[in-house]
Length: 166
Image 1: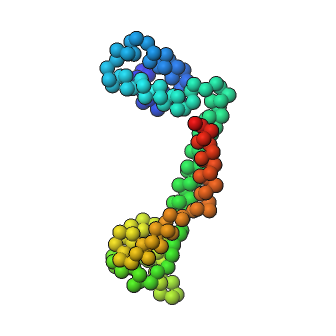
Image 2: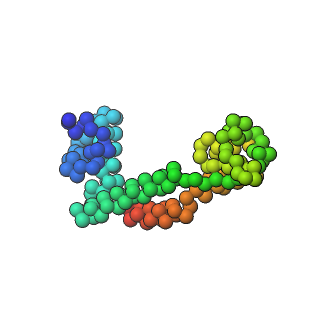
């Protein structure tokens, strides 16, 4: 493949290609490119800078290590959310306005209350259609509090790593 056939994101990971394109971007020929070509060159240079390709080799390795760790943290964060089982129990009268088939899909406990989960099939009907503002508030509070204990350290580490990257 010729270099110009590759997306800027892929080129921005190759230091040799990045340095060549960066050097080309400063030539007179680059100034005479049409709009699309100029944009392509500019995007490639910007992506390379963001990927740390202007850094010294030692700093670049640290940059890549941090980037990999940030990716792992993001995967763990999303994984925790997708495996979350947060829920609350509500009386059927507190679920007025929610479609009957959705209410029927909710498990019942011994006291006859419905188990409302934060998963998509329960969340949106409760938030959008429930007539009881207290139930909607409880749903939103439960939804926004998912994995707080598990994900807070991940977010804190991610912020620290992003500050190092900047």
